[in-house]
Structures are given as C-alpha cells and as structure tokens.
Image (cartoon, rainbow, N blue to C red; front, side):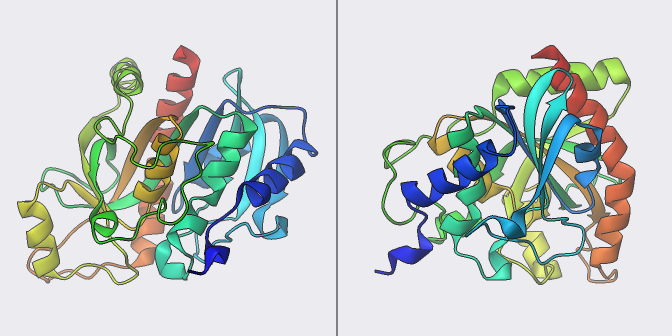
Length: 280
C-alpha cells in the first residue's frame, strides 16, 4: 500500500506550525468557499493571507473561481480561517489529500467548519441565485469506496468508524434559519450530493438523482464534511444554486454560468454567515 497519499501527523503538524508562525490569531472557525464565492475573505479584519501553493504538500486548486489563498483574520469578532477555493477529486488528488486542509484547521484549534459550494438545482422549485441550507448529504462517491478516511486511521482525530447521523449541526442550522428570517432572505433547504465530475450530469443521471431524493448536485463538500465530523467538528453547509438542471437535455450547463450565479449568491451567503457568527 502506498502511504504517501495519506497525510501523516508529522505532515499535518508541519503545516499547522507554518501557519501559526504567520499570525497570533488562533481560528475557532474554518470556512471553505466554493466557485465564485470567495469574496467573504476580503471582509476579514486584521487578516493575514497565505498562498496555498507555497505550503508544502497542500493541495492547490486548478479551477477558475478558486483563488488558492488561505486567509486568517477576524469576522464578527470571531477568529476565522478562510480557504478561498478548494480542490476536487477530479483534479487528480487522492481523497485523503483533499481532507488535508481540514486536518490542519483541526490542529490549529478550529472546532467548527462552514462550507459553501455552487450546485445544480435538482429540486424543480429551486432557481439560480437561491441559497440552500444543506440539511443532509448523500455520499455517493464515498459509498463507492472513495473516502477521505480510507487508509490508516489517525486516532488523534477520531475513531475508525465515525457516526454520520448528524453530519450537519442542528443548532447551527437553527441559527441560519433565524438569520434568514431576520434578514428577509429566502433560504431553501435540502439534500446535497457529491459526484466525481468533472463532466456535468446526463439527463438520465439527473432523473436518478431526483428519484433518490437529491435537491442539489455538486462535485465537492462531502469529503470535507466527513473529515470534519471524524474529529467532532460542528459543520454547517450552504449551496448556492447556480443553474436549474435539465432533465430532458434541452439546456446546456457551463462553468461560466456557475461563476456568474456565484456573483449573485455571494452577498446572500455573506449575510447568512456573518449573522450566524454574530449569534455564536
């Protein structure tokens, strides 16, 4: 077995120490911002920014709309670490390598993870520009064996067989609903599914996803949540609905469309996330 693909405690701690050297802030909340949704990082106070490409072994995104920066600062009085951009399985990284940034956040002391993504709306009621609170996910690629927890279990973080019955924290979801109501924001809710990508789905794929109860589809987030929950982090997730999927194949989907919708969704997500942080 090639263990090089599985990050060791030494490698994780090396990265955590490298980040600690750049700032006195100790983040309590980690955030991962998806395609076209990285603007929140610019709102941090007293911030320090690192290029992830300069961190040894850190997986670096190759996708437009993912800046490849790590920003540590203060938002709504809370010390946070924001990842502007993420990596995906389709870029060629192992699942364990995709989980490495979460491990580093955990070693830095973050006990909460907020994730955002751009997703296709499978639920026919959803419109581009909507925000969906993720209340659960279907880990299709994980069911097929592509798990970020595959390989040696790092007992320092959590058990070999972690529970996933409450992958998304119910108290944090309740806070998000409160914020949406007070801000006058329409907040959809539903089940997110992570597929391998990078090809978008066929109409038959999408009819299958609707049948099994999927509301939004994307190519990220679930591996990060699995690693977060393995170590007991509280997790909160939002999907920005970037497009309505085409069940009859009459409409094409493009990455530009995804990025454009991100520009509309970004301000709503900023209000939601800031509101949640204020209430913690």
